[in-house]
Image (cartoon, rainbow, N blue to C red; front, side, top):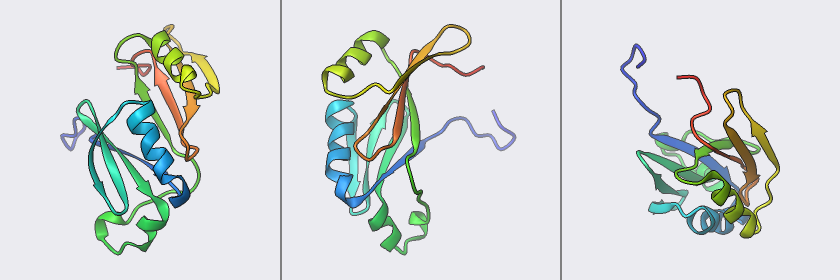
Length: 134
């Protein structure tokens, strides 16, 4: 636990351009099977365990004057998920859905992860388990 009493990451954000929004939302909901829990004009939220993955449309966010919308990015972002069950089955399911696996990596300690992209170009990773030191 940090000196501030922080205990976990609640939200992770990825961004897409307006032209990619429909395909990107469908990718997270249908291809990855995440449960959409909220939508609004500038984005949507998917629940994953105790955390939330937010997807924001860059152009809509830039037009917003809300203080909670004062964030954003250019270029691809990165999110790493962990496989809840079988790593190989998850890899095969994504490949079977037409998702190109760009790289597979073996980490110290023997765990693996593989990298792929969403329709907006964000680099996603699926790890066999926690790949970071405790």
